[in-house]
Length: 391
Length: 224
Image (tube, rainbow over all chains, first blue to last red; front, side, top):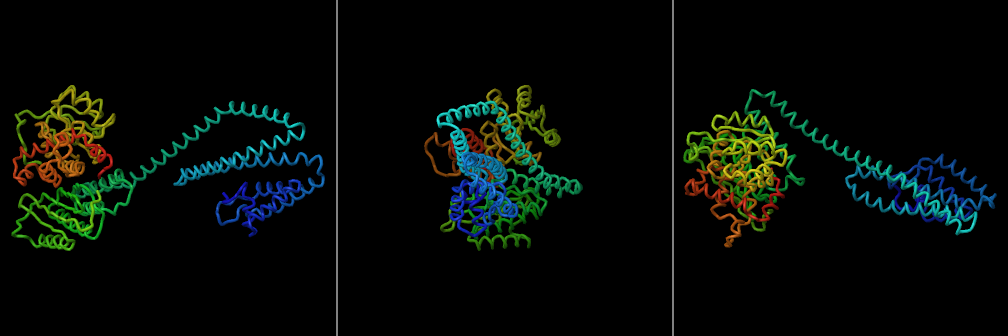
């Protein structure tokens, strides 16, 4: 659609094409129109035959220049003949042209509205587009109808007095109204069919999306599980990873997934679960926005979870709680545990990396382990100045 | 929760259990896993069938799926809880959407466990529920802590339903960390009985509280 157009966009398009001002082109058309309707015929010819351009930069109705030339000449000839003959034909010309323009506006209108319907279906901002389109189209429908009615009145008036012509017009409108009532059910039925069809299409698109998701994830995973049926750990790992992915797809609200503490912790847990054959149960309360200190906590929690997965296996419980700008993470396993007084080297490594990280973030880490009962790592990040809870 | 079995109801006879889940495969799995330690007297795959089976068998415990065709686990609870107060319900679900879980617990379930629970833990949870205690998985404890987030102290007896006592909060936090009731008791220097009392009291608050934040919170959180 042409921006800034009044009727069909011919003047705007021509002005853009010729590099003239729109106002100049319009004035020329109006002057031509006053010369026995010649400008109107020319305008209609351009309008009907030049292609419509949608791009704001491309001149509208450009491209059919040869055709336009021929038509322009034809219109010129017709106009010339009309101007020369004048008289009897002239009295008919104005009303016929007027009504013609009105009908043309209406016809173009139906084309445009169908196009805007299509656009609305495709476009993301469907609602806004349609709303403005309806408002603009309403104006044009009114314009077209007015022109048609004016044309009819003028045509009838040219044969008799105005009162008689109005009476005839009323009769005609009555006939049209009758026709409309007869046709209304058909039109409504057609409209309903269209709406139903559209609904069906939306449904089938949703189905297709679900099918694609199932195919990409669940079916692939099931295939992998069949292939590694002899390895129970691998089967568990695959199933857990898939479950997590599917759950995220089903339940996670749309939004930035990596901007908060819990989101970061979730992805860390998912990653560790994917790398080690163990289940990590994450329970969380509240949330925090991410910053450097929170990232330090997440990194320390990752170390703790990795160690639990490596040394204990089974189910690892992770509990994260945010309150008053601070955060606490507890990583608990049910592994063999160890005697804190006789720490093996790798456990010492865990301790150093976790404790060191937490200290750099301004927090503390404590490891509690009882042989035979598992290990719990507690990470505490106190509230920093200016930090606020995001809950 | 395997190591602190209370055996008050273990008078020789097996507990009678009804399985309600719309997945036949899952029911078969549960049956094969715990069928020798409890007496599974009936199964159902939707709400109507569940209500029928529960009425006719009057089991000790119903293992109830949160999501069921015909209205969900909540519909089964609504139909049975008033009529059969001696039947206890334990919610069992893969759905971790907080609003679904809270809804079923408020509907009268004595607890909530996830379907990934081991057979041994499940048997223990069934026993606990049959004894009239509450069973909180770490996840449910997390939901509760989140729902009762604000820690303000209220003296009014009516409003006391809307907040957790400091002790209850401590118990919930330890359960959320993956502690068994026995470990909670040891950590807080309490008896297991006292821990059970605290948990039951939290369950009651969860069921009876009119705290509108609870419903609002549950709606807003579809926690993974």
